[in-house]
Amino acid sequence: MLRIFGRRGAITKIGLTPPAPQAGRGGLAVVLIVRNEERHIAEWARFHAAAGVARFVVYDNGCTDGTLAALQAAVPGLATVIPWDQKFTAGGASGGEIHNQVLAYAHATRNFGGAFRWMTYIDVDEFLVPKRAASLPAALAHLDSCRNISLPWHMFGRNGHDAPPEGGVLANYTSRNPDPMSDSPGLRRFKMIVDPCHVTAIKVHTVWTDGSDATCNDRGEAADARGRERSGFYSADHIQLNHYYTRSDQELRAKIARGPNLTTPDADHLRRVMRKVAAIEAGQIEDRAAPDFLRRLAAGGTGGTSVP
Image 1 (spheres, rainbow, N blue to C red):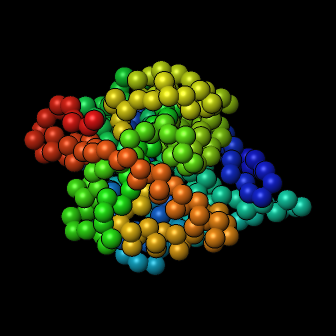
Image 2: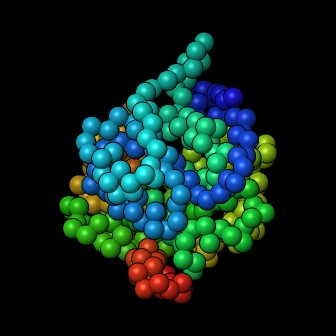
């Protein structure tokens, strides 16, 4: 059962009755909503499969290119694809638009979550990078008592690329904003890895488990949703969430043209995005956590990375 939480203008929080755990449940499932990411989805999917993801639950938000074929070729047998090209509004006087991304996350949790120990909700421009362990499940092993883990964005900008470079995202984008807990608008955000059998409500950047917004960092230290905003909550000791927000300048312009997940006036969207880009690209530092993980994996090792 799903429950819709409304606010004026939009519905961005959806409540649900958690799925019952299935016998033998285990592993990590990644939930993705996607539209026209043919260029990047294979690299994204192969990386996460190599990092130990057991299942990709993919919501097709109206793809018109080769995204889905590239996904299935990259991770054959690992992706479940669901048509999800829609825009819903609430009935009655409010008429608020229901956030299609959040609706997908709630649907995935309720309908697929019972089979998995962990579930996460990320986009094609986000990579979950194990920092020390050889896989994401191994990096989560010490967090068995946590039902909700918050990982802060590490924000990567254009890295001087006007056009998409050859060789993919991870090798070509190795400079990021230095402060994942920055107060700059839009930079301090989290994505969650959760026990889906305890999820009771969900937004894009907050998940409630057992009716509470209590969460852990990747060291297992607990806070509520407000407390995780404090600098002392920050950790990327075990899993780093890389957000390649812009990729190249050409791709950034295309992203702006596509518009946001909720209907927003074009000028407002442009101002918001470019303000965020300017903040991301201020005082960048080198960060090679993702390519370092791939090198460790290729070498069969589990040593640490060289991230600043």
